[in-house]
Amino acid sequence: MRKNRFLLISFGLFIGLFGVAEANHLSGKVEVEGGKELKNMIVYLEPAESLSNKPDPMVHKVLQKGRRYNPDLIVVNPRDKIQFLNDEDREIDHNIYSLSKFKNFDLGLGERGSVLEIEIDNIGSGNFYCSVHRMMEGRIVSINTRHFAILEKPGNFILPNIPPGNWVAKVIVFHKRYKSIPINISLSGKAHENIELKVVKK
Image (cartoon, rainbow, N blue to C red; front, side):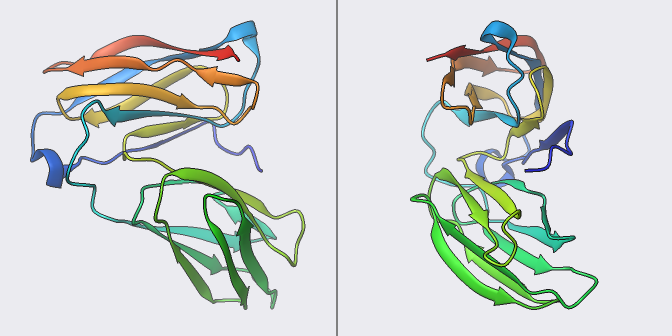
């Protein structure tokens, strides 16, 4: 995958869940045991208590241009849809497929200008590819929150507009030999800063 992001922040206000309550921000740092430069970690917040209502579904767009997916890492929620747009300058066909247990699909061939769509129905992650171009690869990650940040490498992060309440801060790590240690956080009416999230060897 291309490492073309230093820090991508995406967030949701959960208006339908919490109303327009005063929001806070959460900032801190991800540290990896041994100082290993792990790539594309996802910092995110989940509500500490289960919620009967879920965020409204969204539509995400992934461009296919220059024989690449952009973005090549996309974070979604269950019920979200992903549209794959063939945006090539020339007449180049693309196929989008995945053999993952998370979401097994094959959208067939899409010509230039076409839009192919899938709907995400569960939590998890999996890679997707193009059968025409072997170097094209992307990853879908589905979580139960709109509050997340993608870090290209370990370091500082900011999660803005977090409603008050009890949360669990976690890190998704794609390296099989590492895991994160969750932290419980309570936000009541002011910013919560300088938290440390640890990623350690299994």
